[in-house]
Image (tube, rainbow, N blue to C red; front, side, top):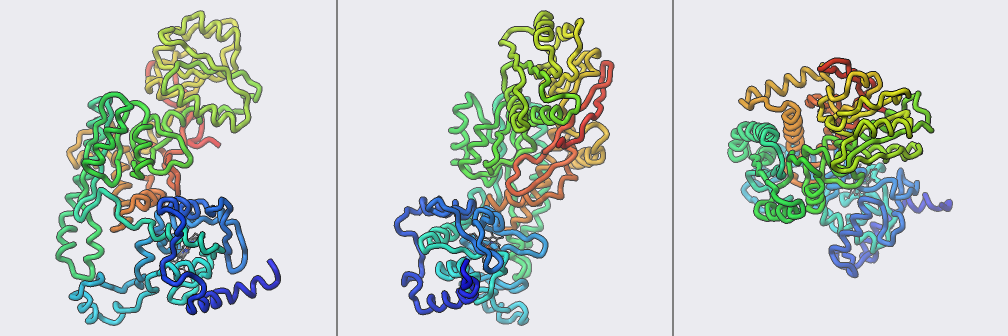
Length: 578
Ligand code: HEC
């Protein structure tokens, strides 16, 4: 920057305003539109500016912070501060105002001021009779395209107020500015489908092959939450129509909840069509819970493509992605056990990098997820690939198989990603050689039937275990049981029911916080921000939330088993292994 830079910047706002007033800075009419682009193209390019800090040319945007420090716009993207929805946030004392079309195009009222809707003359007149402190002037008038561009260029809003320097200034060419303004004008403008004046509609997806008991456990708890919400709402609804006029706005946020059940039947490749039909017949605001024995992929993709939030589906096979946004999972499912095995072995002092690791598995969704979780972490640690031994369909692991595996590979670590049935001949791994130092199992693959691991192996057996242990969270479990009892819901599967209890708990908070801003991105951002609510979860020691984080449980235990027919679990690792 030349010596003149700061000087010019200091006066830049004034100069630009002058140019604007004399009408020479931009085209004559007020609308700024990137005329050479289709609307969709402008939205796509604007979204990239907003979310990634990248100009339509592909170059990074240039931002100026704290007055005169130029920085790469990718470091401070609009959505880092204003959120993807554009509805902003309050954190401590910093208020990041909304920057979505709907809010920018209307004046911002001052706190405590009351302004009835445009055109409501009766209420406008009523306002005149209010005490002066309710009649204060707006904090700023509605933005026009030009004054919006001006605020982004200079940091001065149309009321002439200098915007807090935390908000960067952006050096953008006219056309790039037009693209960004077009994007902001169209960001979170129309309320999401699935909400009307009285009701928010949700659906839950259940696929073929779900046991009736699981289905009931999920549905009964979810429905109990919906009923609880609706019964509390009766007096809210009355207030919305009869409350004092200056409070009606607040109470108008209340909606009844309604839950549809979407059952997916037949082959998986017909599910996208079925989902589309359900949605067309009756749009919903979000999907809640849901349950599928197999992969969640089809529903995940439906949710992503249609920008419909899915909150806490019950699945062992979520989609693992760092960029997908619309599905919030409890955990990475079985993948997480594989990841944990890798972390644990990597941290173990007695497992040298060159140790021989053998993984025995059978082709299937479970072992694929475990292996993927394991190898993605293992590669990050730059450890050599383990040896994989795949059992062929129908082939039993015979005594010879185990002997051969031991003799030829002499594994230091043996990972057995197999079900209990496949352990029938496991005693043959003992011979005149040393047992592997660690034999790793997965709780999910053993179906939590730990007695399948024979006594003689237990000193060396380590099991990844993705839930709280007995004795942990007892009060939280009791709390869920009481809650169910009060609502006359039989306790059928406390694990499933605790998860749905937690979902409802979070949902209540998120719906309260979005007030009447029924935008789906905003709704999900509210879950991201509810990071202090995890005391309501009974089956995980801890859940964590954060912007864009989509797997709330970040941990998993490694346990050992005591001997005897009913083994107890003994903790051998922390919940989160670093
Ligand atoms: C580092 C955080 C941060 C980043 C990055 C950021 N903003 Fe802001 N922005 C703020 C804060 C804080 C305010 C409120 C400041 C005030 O009112 O004094 C604000 C205010 C605004 C306003 C004025 C709102 C009003 O009602 O007057 C607009 C418009 C805006 N930002 C748009 C954007 C856009 C577009 C981007 C990206 C190109 C962006 N902001 C990037 C923090 C940020």
